[in-house]
Length: 163
Image (cartoon, rainbow, N blue to C red; front, side, top):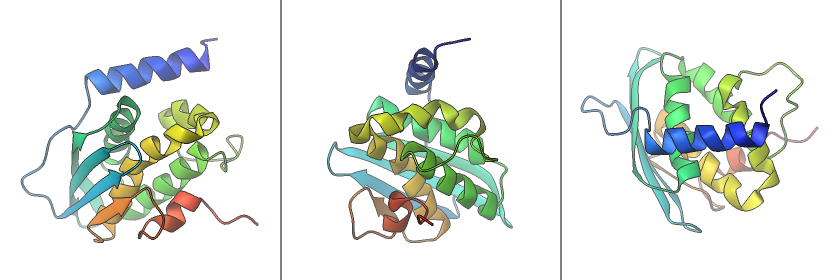
Protein backbone atom coordinates (compact mmCIF):
# COMPACT_ATOMS: atom_id res chain seq x y z
CA UNK A 1 0.00 0.00 0.00
CA UNK A 2 1.26 3.49 -0.82
CA UNK A 3 2.55 5.69 1.98
CA UNK A 4 -0.20 8.29 2.69
CA UNK A 5 2.40 11.03 3.24
CA UNK A 6 4.07 10.32 -0.10
CA UNK A 7 0.68 10.33 -1.83
CA UNK A 8 -0.20 13.62 -0.12
CA UNK A 9 3.07 15.20 -1.28
CA UNK A 10 2.63 13.88 -4.82
CA UNK A 11 -0.93 15.20 -5.10
CA UNK A 12 0.01 18.61 -3.63
CA UNK A 13 2.94 18.97 -6.02
CA UNK A 14 0.87 17.91 -9.04
CA UNK A 15 -2.00 20.31 -8.32
CA UNK A 16 0.43 23.11 -7.45
CA UNK A 17 2.35 22.75 -10.72
CA UNK A 18 -0.72 22.12 -12.88
CA UNK A 19 -3.73 23.59 -11.08
CA UNK A 20 -7.09 22.62 -12.52
CA UNK A 21 -9.63 25.36 -13.26
CA UNK A 22 -7.07 28.12 -12.65
CA UNK A 23 -8.18 31.49 -14.01
CA UNK A 24 -11.45 33.31 -14.06
CA UNK A 25 -14.79 32.79 -15.76
CA UNK A 26 -16.35 35.65 -17.64
CA UNK A 27 -19.94 34.60 -16.98
CA UNK A 28 -19.62 34.15 -13.19
CA UNK A 29 -22.84 34.46 -11.24
CA UNK A 30 -21.02 34.28 -7.89
CA UNK A 31 -17.63 35.52 -6.74
CA UNK A 32 -15.65 35.84 -3.50
CA UNK A 33 -12.17 36.79 -2.39
CA UNK A 34 -10.32 34.89 0.32
CA UNK A 35 -7.35 35.97 2.37
CA UNK A 36 -5.13 34.35 4.98
CA UNK A 37 -3.35 37.26 6.69
CA UNK A 38 -0.96 34.94 8.55
CA UNK A 39 0.78 33.62 5.45
CA UNK A 40 -0.39 35.99 2.73
CA UNK A 41 -2.50 33.55 0.70
CA UNK A 42 -4.99 35.50 -1.41
CA UNK A 43 -7.40 33.78 -3.80
CA UNK A 44 -10.52 34.56 -5.75
CA UNK A 45 -13.20 32.01 -6.55
CA UNK A 46 -15.72 32.61 -9.31
CA UNK A 47 -18.48 30.25 -10.32
CA UNK A 48 -21.60 30.03 -12.38
CA UNK A 49 -24.71 28.44 -10.96
CA UNK A 50 -27.14 27.02 -13.49
CA UNK A 51 -30.23 26.72 -11.37
CA UNK A 52 -28.88 25.04 -8.25
CA UNK A 53 -25.90 23.37 -9.93
CA UNK A 54 -22.30 24.59 -10.16
CA UNK A 55 -21.88 24.60 -13.94
CA UNK A 56 -18.46 26.22 -13.95
CA UNK A 57 -15.90 27.25 -11.33
CA UNK A 58 -12.42 28.73 -11.36
CA UNK A 59 -9.92 30.24 -8.97
CA UNK A 60 -6.95 32.53 -9.22
CA UNK A 61 -4.54 34.37 -6.96
CA UNK A 62 -1.25 34.04 -5.13
CA UNK A 63 -0.92 31.32 -2.54
CA UNK A 64 1.26 28.58 -1.14
CA UNK A 65 1.32 25.10 -2.67
CA UNK A 66 -1.14 23.66 -0.13
CA UNK A 67 -3.70 26.40 -0.74
CA UNK A 68 -3.36 26.19 -4.52
CA UNK A 69 -3.63 22.39 -4.51
CA UNK A 70 -6.65 22.53 -2.21
CA UNK A 71 -8.34 25.10 -4.48
CA UNK A 72 -7.56 23.03 -7.56
CA UNK A 73 -8.98 19.84 -6.07
CA UNK A 74 -11.95 21.75 -4.67
CA UNK A 75 -12.95 23.06 -8.11
CA UNK A 76 -12.77 19.55 -9.57
CA UNK A 77 -14.77 18.11 -6.67
CA UNK A 78 -17.64 20.61 -6.73
CA UNK A 79 -18.12 21.14 -10.47
CA UNK A 80 -21.48 19.61 -11.36
CA UNK A 81 -22.62 19.46 -7.73
CA UNK A 82 -25.69 21.21 -6.36
CA UNK A 83 -25.32 24.08 -3.92
CA UNK A 84 -26.32 21.83 -0.99
CA UNK A 85 -23.92 19.06 -2.07
CA UNK A 86 -21.10 21.62 -2.27
CA UNK A 87 -21.95 23.02 1.17
CA UNK A 88 -21.89 19.50 2.65
CA UNK A 89 -18.50 18.86 1.06
CA UNK A 90 -17.22 22.20 2.42
CA UNK A 91 -18.28 21.21 5.95
CA UNK A 92 -16.78 17.72 5.66
CA UNK A 93 -13.49 18.97 4.19
CA UNK A 94 -13.06 21.53 6.97
CA UNK A 95 -14.00 18.97 9.62
CA UNK A 96 -11.51 16.50 8.10
CA UNK A 97 -8.62 18.97 8.00
CA UNK A 98 -9.28 20.03 11.59
CA UNK A 99 -9.41 16.42 12.80
CA UNK A 100 -13.15 16.51 13.56
CA UNK A 101 -14.41 14.14 10.85
CA UNK A 102 -14.61 10.42 11.59
CA UNK A 103 -13.07 9.06 8.40
CA UNK A 104 -14.64 5.66 9.12
CA UNK A 105 -18.17 7.07 8.93
CA UNK A 106 -19.91 7.74 5.62
CA UNK A 107 -18.71 10.97 4.02
CA UNK A 108 -18.32 12.59 0.62
CA UNK A 109 -14.64 13.62 0.69
CA UNK A 110 -13.50 10.95 -1.78
CA UNK A 111 -10.09 11.81 -3.24
CA UNK A 112 -9.85 14.83 -0.98
CA UNK A 113 -8.93 12.45 1.84
CA UNK A 114 -5.27 13.02 0.90
CA UNK A 115 -5.68 16.21 2.97
CA UNK A 116 -6.69 14.31 6.12
CA UNK A 117 -3.11 14.41 7.43
CA UNK A 118 -3.09 18.21 7.38
CA UNK A 119 -4.80 18.06 10.78
CA UNK A 120 -1.37 17.03 12.13
CA UNK A 121 0.08 20.31 10.79
CA UNK A 122 -2.03 22.98 12.55
CA UNK A 123 -0.07 25.85 11.00
CA UNK A 124 -1.05 24.64 7.51
CA UNK A 125 -4.75 23.94 8.15
CA UNK A 126 -5.71 27.52 7.31
CA UNK A 127 -3.85 27.22 4.00
CA UNK A 128 -5.87 24.14 3.06
CA UNK A 129 -9.26 25.51 4.14
CA UNK A 130 -9.03 29.03 2.67
CA UNK A 131 -10.38 28.00 -0.77
CA UNK A 132 -13.28 26.22 0.91
CA UNK A 133 -14.18 29.27 3.01
CA UNK A 134 -13.98 31.35 -0.14
CA UNK A 135 -16.28 28.95 -2.00
CA UNK A 136 -18.73 29.14 0.91
CA UNK A 137 -18.60 32.95 0.76
CA UNK A 138 -19.23 32.87 -3.00
CA UNK A 139 -22.18 30.49 -2.69
CA UNK A 140 -23.69 32.66 0.04
CA UNK A 141 -22.94 35.98 -1.70
CA UNK A 142 -20.93 37.34 1.24
CA UNK A 143 -18.14 38.51 -1.08
CA UNK A 144 -15.13 37.68 1.07
CA UNK A 145 -13.65 35.20 3.48
CA UNK A 146 -10.74 35.21 5.87
CA UNK A 147 -9.09 32.58 7.99
CA UNK A 148 -9.24 34.92 10.98
CA UNK A 149 -12.10 35.21 13.47
CA UNK A 150 -14.95 37.64 13.04
CA UNK A 151 -15.66 36.61 9.47
CA UNK A 152 -18.72 35.14 7.82
CA UNK A 153 -17.03 31.75 7.68
CA UNK A 154 -15.94 31.70 11.32
CA UNK A 155 -18.41 28.93 12.09
CA UNK A 156 -17.00 26.81 9.29
CA UNK A 157 -13.43 27.22 10.50
CA UNK A 158 -14.50 26.08 13.96
CA UNK A 159 -15.86 22.92 12.36
CA UNK A 160 -19.05 21.07 13.24
CA UNK A 161 -20.43 21.62 16.70
CA UNK A 162 -19.29 19.05 19.19
CA UNK A 163 -22.10 16.95 20.54
